[in-house]
Length: 417
Image (cartoon, rainbow, N blue to C red; front, side, top):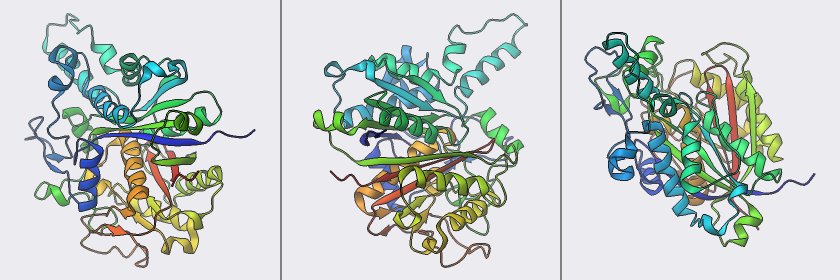
């Protein structure tokens, strides 16, 4: 069977360092940190008092106060980034077959804020169940693609992928496969997350997963640094329009890149910890390369999962060393989580956008906040520490790993006729 070619024709982003793709990319290129003291709730009694919050987002202004109240923040974020991507792709759905356009969305947790608020309200009452009628439809993780399809009248495949921090990489892979198999012409794909609230921060604190560098939030996310001690929570959304090449050409679309492969694997090791030897991570990168018909020698840049955790960062580098061999010294590696924090289910989409922009510009965004070398890492590896680097970038790979041992890796290349 001959696969259809799949291209990227639209991008949208809402991130802690920029509320549009141009703002986001500019901040990434300059090495801007999005971490600051949390403003959305009182952190007096919390171990971690900072995060990478979205800034300047006005849900009431975007949606209207009435509609905004019906939607959890993770859905608000999804609709916002998708509107940018739809405009960027210059889509006029009235001229397209919407039965062949779908939405596949990723979210690791869904409407956590809604769940928290409703349970607190119930606990404060007299035991009478006075729940908001929008409680369930605001909370469920699948509701984001539902709202996107309703807004634009899209009747193709519609569902959510939930695989923790690999969720939106999985959404991209599913959309990619449906299109190349000829099952659809286009997908709105990506992911969103909104966990910066009492339950999200408190829950990850209880796991000892978050950085507690409260005296210096801006430098707290330190992937591959000797003094890394936990990830920094982030929030936001990323949207990528994936489209069958012939369909894109027929409507005169601009093309950012071509998606050429995706891999999936499981660690089969532990419910939260990655495999210490990076076996699942190596397997997923090799699977993505095989799917794309590429070798390690073809990759120029790997946007790594790189969360700034003591055990997570080394296992990923072991996996890259296993996968790339001596080619590891030729490629650039960077963790954009050093700037955005960890957007969990939205991370894959937001980082895929960074990878696509690296293809477009020949700029590798940096891994900021590097102060002290960790002897566990080979010093000859180019981690793109602290400052963006210019180079020829033709093919990029972006990794996402999640609790439960879920691994997903995607590959994009420069579009060629």
